[in-house]
Image 1 (cartoon, rainbow, N blue to C red):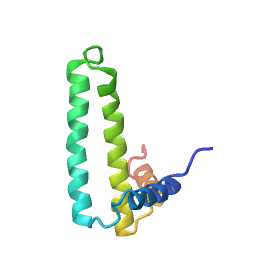
Image 2: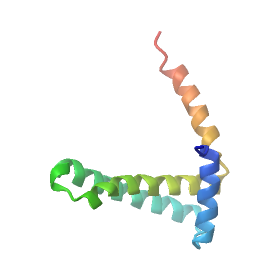
Image 3: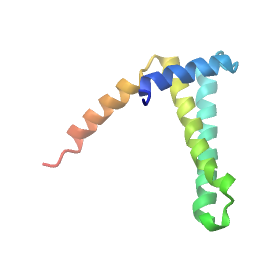
Length: 103
């Protein structure tokens, strides 16, 4: 059975505490999120600019890992500011449905 987004958010927050990252300030989380965004851009550019045939398998998985790193930081930021990401995403989808509905 798959976990809900809320369950994943709770799990990531608990893991970050177990890994010793529970004391990060919001500012530090935001800077690290920006840093991870740069790492994702670099990994994606490397994969797509140079082509999968020329990129070793272990490097291709770096895009996946950088996306996961961003999600970890997003959950940590959300927790720091008291946002349930599952509710936030559901709300945003509803808003976009209204905003972009074909008329």
